Length: 250
Image (tube, rainbow, N blue to C red; front, side, top):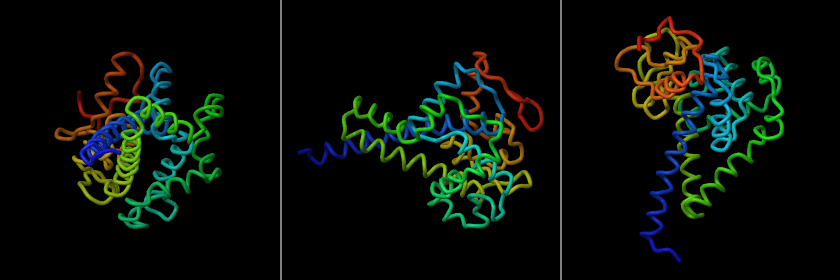
């Protein structure tokens, strides 16, 4: 039987681990999955792509083709009834709290996914490993259990899900309702949201130039993922699609 202080400590430690793992998952989601695979803003060397794909798998279980298909549909049908998660159509609160179910509904539509991902063939490794969307998170949870024990692992997994799902919902809802709109699109730029979502909160910038690997365009905007991207570029582990347009000087 654990004492109350011990349980509280387990909760706090679990929350901290959950937040860190969620932030890692968000970083990998934006760099590898969003900017890389979905928008082709950068191309990764396999030496970088494989570990990031593995991290994405064990922290989220996301199937890249499904995620890319849904997100490309979002851009193609922005703020129409065909947009999978438009606050303008469905309401910001609904998107914020039910974004995960909206995503899954669209992701399980094979016609939609195939239409928007005909440039993304499933590899043998996808079919036998990475498309097993429950196995990855199970292995991730098992690793936490082995390292921290089942109590902390339980809280860490719970908080990880809350943070990751909640912040993604915030990008799709708050990132289209609150903040600045320097470009003529429904996305908004929010500094705090950008800080906790590895730059994804600079959503107006993203919709203005979807192929930009850097989401901070002017002084005062902060895109945490850009420094990770620059590090990989300096190690010759990725190449950028372009450096012109609205990309701010480095």
